[in-house]
Image (tube, rainbow, N blue to C red):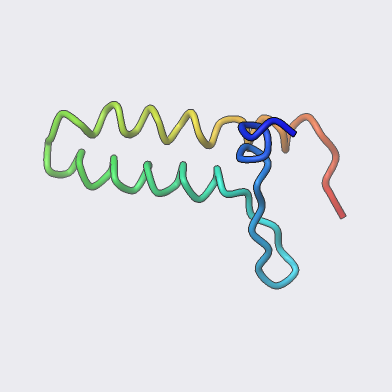
Length: 69
């Protein structure tokens, strides 16, 4: 299996819920970007863009595929 695809589809199971690791990473980048934006630092922009790129495939996949049961 392609290691990049395995990393892309990695999941964390908490209780009955499944969370993709890329969502956790993307949200962490988003929080860091928000903190950087409040402090008015330049690195907040690229960090925010990286976080958006991590989370975007998650929301696109949920809109185009039926809900997993």
